[in-house]
Every structure is written in C-alpha cells, then in structure tokens.
Image (cartoon, rainbow, N blue to C red; front, side, top):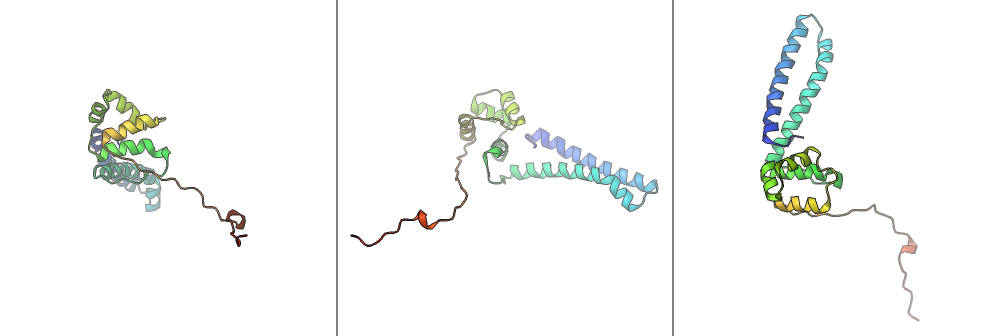
Length: 156
C-alpha cells in the first residue's frame, strides 16, 4: 500500500521503468528467435509484477480522490485509517501534529498498518482526521420455529 506522495512518485517512476524494461525484453526475446508462445511465457512474470505496481498506483489515486470502500470488518481498520488520511489530503507529518506525536510514530504505525491499534487510539485518529464512524452489526439469520413465538389463546 502506498502511504505517501513520495512513495507514490517513486512507484510511478518504477512503473514507467518496468514498462520500458518489458518492451526491451520482448524485443530481445523475439530477436533470439523465440515464438510468440515462448515470449509470452517468459514475459508473464514481468507483466504480473507490472500489473501489481499499476494496481497500487491506481489505488492511491482513488484514495486521493476520496474514493474508498466500506470497512467490512475490523481486520481492515488499519488500512482504512491510512486510506482516510490520504483521502483527507493529510501528510503523515500533519496527522502527527494533530495527534501531538512525532511523525516517525505515524510512519511506524502506518508501516505496520496500525496492527493491534486500541479502540481509544483509533478514535483519536478518527477525531484528528475529522471523520465520524458509523457501524452496524449483522448476525446470521435464523429461522423462526413455531416454539419461538407465543401463541395467544382465548382469555380465560
């Protein structure tokens, strides 16, 4: 996950380099006389890596536009806190100032995706981001049995 503008710029540069490398490698393999099927097989791992980089870049760009998905469970809370910071347009330094902690603390927390973050700490971060959280709980639906309801008979 890209966590800062600097990481984003680095990833964009790297993606550009990987695209150039893929093109050059394809030409080299064709010059060696490999058939299309062999070239494809040789390039598939490079393409896969390039697609992962592109996905990371696109994900960060969506967050910068304020587009992110709903939190489905608490396991994704850490990534959501990072996504919210990015969507709000704050740097790690700015969030650290709002939390009255050192920037390195926010950097470390985000690198670990807020692993084992406490409810109190998550609440402070949400407050600092100016975000309010709403939650709902959904349990498995159970079928009602006739014994689950009370049948009212005639009054005696």
